[in-house]
Image (cartoon, rainbow, N blue to C red; front, side):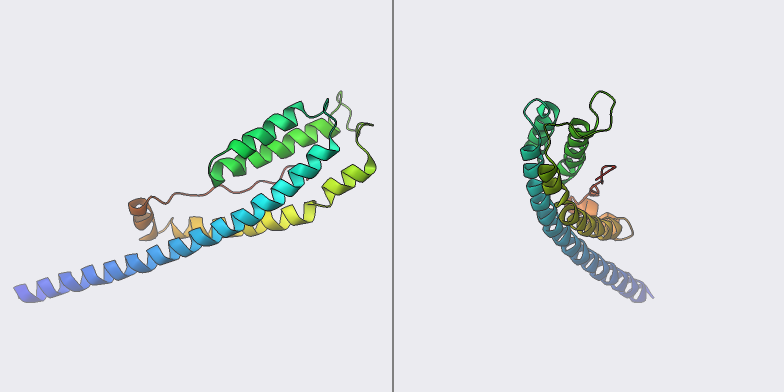
Length: 167
């Protein structure tokens, strides 16, 4: 009888270990995909922010430049994801919110505004791919045994990229 109990206990431990190993593999794969998608999103944002900087005059760009500096100096995907939304908001404020008026300032040419708008599709696609990868990753670390495995190996939830109204 005692041998059967030990055998059952060993079988349960082996099953839990195998389940945990599979969960760890899924978490690692989801983490790698989220990182890959982040690199694409970061590249799209860098191109967009460069076009935004070209579009703004130096008098319009103080808050925008500070937000870009926060983005560039941010460490990690989560803080950069939050900082990206701040850059978009600062740009919108610099371009469209002059003196409470929602008109584009005369210092911004139509060609420069169109160059910024041309990056919309690339940023939107990169943001969507990244957010889908983050959804898969966050799901993989939220259930059992993924949550236990994630805590053991230091994995935590990722932040989604937010779209700014009007962009």
